[in-house]
Amino acid sequence: MDWERNIPFLPIFMLPYMTSQVFFLATIFLEKNESNLKLLIKRAAFLIAVSTALFVIFPMKFYFPKPEVDNQILKSFFYILGKIDSSFNQCPSLHVSFAFLSAEVYCREVKSKFLKSFFGIWGLLLAISVLFVYQHHFIDFVGGTLIFLITCIIFPRKKGCLSVLLPNDGKSYNNR
Image 1 (tube, rainbow, N blue to C red):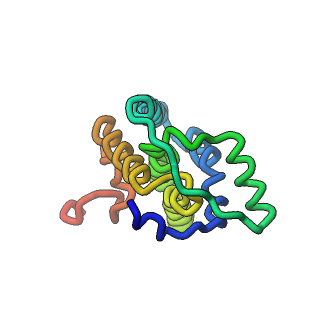
Image 2 (cartoon, rainbow, N blue to C red):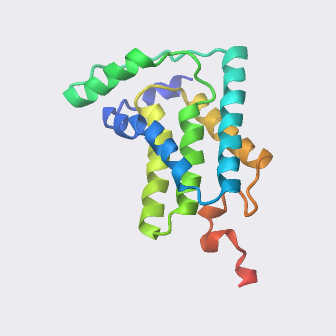
Image 3 (spheres, helix red, strand yellow):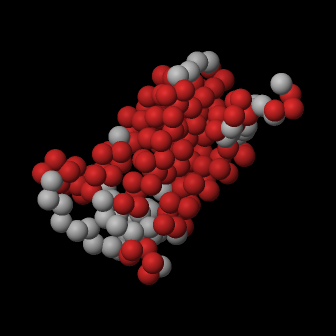
């Protein structure tokens, strides 16, 4: 997709990108009961299994060259990423699907409205960072989003996967 070349390279987005592992791992400690933790683990395992199968069946590679980074701190992050990451296994993006999976847990379990907003925005920044640091193509972003939504349909939460994003915790206004 030629229009993708118009997506700017923004090295500052490496900051949310590099927090992905901590952002997800913390959700394990946020879950308040065993059934929620089991659901999180089922969803995570499903995301990994399906994504891995798709990586094997349809291997994809990222093709844009990364511009040079001037900031030494960000440059070191890109260096580390280059040592541990592969340009293969792109679609669906696990960074994207796990960012949304994690944000859903934070928005449900954290009580403070400010922190819910903060973690929801951080999850979105983490998800879109894959585009701005040239780690994934747009189709990888869409794939990661879709596999997250499919996971929520296959492994639903009683209130609904995305109910935390609706006013009044997903309850209808008619049921007040």
